[in-house]
Image (cartoon, rainbow, N blue to C red; front, side, top):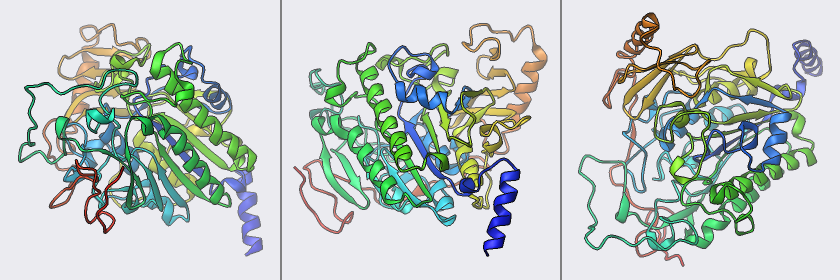
Length: 489
């Protein structure tokens, strides 16, 4: 056995990879609604020293794609697939939705757990809030967080307005409307019940305005506890932050510190959180055997103060500003310091990439993601995707092949290598590229389809017979979630 391990170590060293990195610890930090240019490494003047250092010691991914909105993006990250394949919904999921990510899907946590990893999710989940869909039913050993967006609660609790602003009052003529019978995605608007903080299988707190201010620091504490408890590894930490989604609730000591208003304040707190995690890895001497990825679930919301410059567009759109996200990967000794790649990469690549790094086994079903470990290690001739399809809900809205991007409805063609801001429509000048990209789009008709919820390659949603809020309007915890009924403060 000793001889075999020694031989394996020699072979790995010959390949330029340390033996310690055979099963590296893996951390994936996913910020909510962070704009492409909201952090220093991607052009912000806002102070983000820890992310600046992370980029200086690691690699920037400048053509990394998510999805235009929250739930589809997270489903893609967790499963290694285009979002429409695994979570075919028109927009996002809401509280008490009857549908969610199907438990039959194999998540990145399940793959890594099978490879011997301890797994934890700390933060916003947002691919289903019923017990069958929550992280502890999808491969994570533990979960701590708000299971959907922080604006999906009652206005009286501060969920619909920023701190310091008047609590938004419902229109006197507004009525609580029951969702249409065919809408299974959950409660909306005035029907939304209190925000729950969930730990494993229990609702432990009703999240109001004061609690929102503390959520980032509490996530960070839980993440650091998990790292300490599993320092002998290997471990996988998925940290999808509530920050910086509207309403904007930075920790109180960060408020007013940034030139970019509340979103800049909260981004500075996120930067501090990243710094605490990286410092802990150094303190525990885990930095040489840990890979950390930092990214966002979609582009920034311009109406809430984000910047996606020089990209065009905002969250919710398939212009680059809605779907291309700032991404940094750090791993001393594995990821070359101060490096950058413009290869086309995406959230659906994390599962195959981390599986390769962990020596795990890929799910035995169709994946759309690609193993990016050669790109991340700076290997010559390593490439990302040749083609990327921009889905928004059910609809394929654009396609990219190499540097060329075609918006299917308008027929606008852009060369992203020369025109990252999508300002110069060159369709008339390059009709052959238009034809080529339209043919690529048509090739998806018999897989994920061009529009509509169903297509041959779309897999079934998870579904429950009767969805129930995690916290009822009167503050009682739902019966059956933890076996008792109780009222939270």
